[in-house]
Amino acid sequence: MSVLSVRNLRVRYTAKGPEILKGIDFDVEGDDFLAMIGPSGAGKSTLIRCVNRLVEPTGGQITLLGQDVCALNARQLRGLRRNVGMIFQEFNLINRMSVMDNVLSGRLGYTSNIRSLFRHFPKKDISQALDYLDRVGLGDHINKRADELSGGQRQRVGIARALMQQPKLLLLDEPTSALDPKISREVMALILSIAKELGVPTLCNIHDVQLAKEFCNRIIGLQDGHKKFDGATATLRESDLEEIYAMEVL
Amino acid sequence: MAIVQCHSNGLPLQIDTQIGLRRKRQMRMALIWGGFLLFAAWCLNGTIVEDTDWSRIGGRNGVFASLGRYLTIDWTLLPELIVPTIETFMMASVGTVLGCFFSLPVAWLGAVNVTPNKTILYPLARFLMVISRSVHEIVWALIFVSAVGLGALPGVLAIAMRSVGFISKITAEAIENIDAKPVEAIRATGGNEFQVMYYGILPQIYPVVLATVIFEWDINIRRSAVMGLVGAGGLGLLFFRQMNSFNYGGVSMVILSILLLIVLGEIISHYLRKAVI
Image (cartoon, rainbow over all chains, first blue to last red; front, side, top):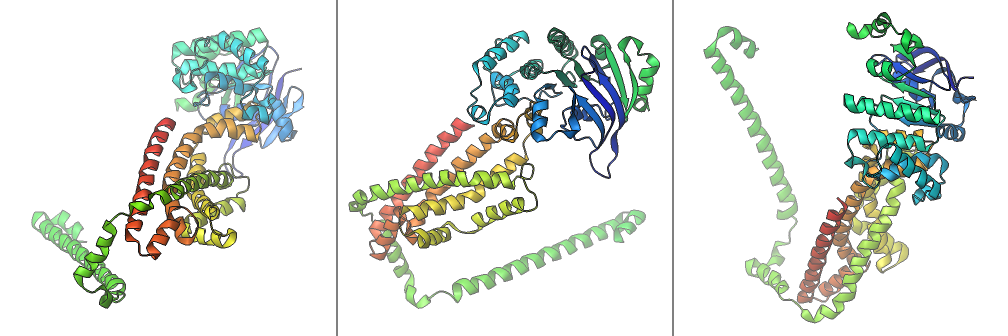
């Protein structure tokens, strides 16, 4: 059974506004490192945010880890979100907190209010955070403030924070588009190797087709809220790309 | 229409239109200034010419003699000043802290992006902010003196009430201006509403809030110095007594200590602000 399955997903932000997603179907399997490509405004970010309901779908069905996402109440939804790590385009770190506290904040879904009030995280969380920080190569920056780091380093903090959740699915929303090409490759390679190591399926929005081809085993092409392509990376042809990016050429 | 003509007919007419336009503007300025001067004269007549008891002033020398009485300083008052000065300082500090506590829920309800209810609680919070600021601290003190009696407590309450408006308004605006991205990230980890506020919002607003509170404390020292005028303790009470017993040197002495206290507050808040920002 697939980890995530999306059926006929539709989204409008306002009742009378344009439909952003117009009936999307796809599945993510246990060993997928799946890229979602498409021009700006195609609905990639909206789609990825529907998976953990940061955006409320207006129609369709999402089944994640055997649960019907749209039917969950607030408490159940928080329980589900704990299992889904998310890495963001602009890192979304808490700038005034230390790198360590940022990474620990990935555990908030598992932490009581009293503990979080005093930032009193369990010892095993702290040692886990140290391990992950070491793994992403930030062992020397643990006590710095997040806003003292460079872009690539900040994204590594974001990766460690997502890993702290012990995720069963990783969502990446344009993880490299705020980074330069060299750092982008390093960050993608790091995420890929960790995802393989931990066996976590990954869904990744990315507008850089080259990066998608290089790192992902499967590609979904979106255009203007429609799915235009879905298949293994090797089967993506130039003509498919032309169709996906047709609007942009015009 | 003149502008259209000058385009088609060339230079001489353009000059005429220009002069015409300038004359019109001069006329308008003259009218505005004339109206303003008339209004000012009317105000002056109402407040000073008709409202002053000219017979009691009794000439230029009388005025200077009255003012001159304040130039002496009654140093014998010094031992009596120490306790009220400390009390004034404490009233300002406790009032500010209390005001902060009152401000928290008001700011939360009054920030449009986090308020739990936009139709009732949000307007209510905004209304509280306006009430707090539109009622003068002396009026607040009068209300609390009649409610809890004389002493420092009504002063503390008055200062707290008066502080809520400013602190909560600035805090609510800071909450409205936060970057939504860290909030989204905390929500995505499965954090609850409290954790979203504490980790996503608070770190972003606290420098602004702290600076505002320090500024308000600075102002509150000034406010608490006059609280005693209506019986709410501190230096103001002493001031009032010196005034009533016509001890002008004593009045000057109290004013001097208020001045010193305010300078002290200014110095402390300067260093506090530096430490925060």
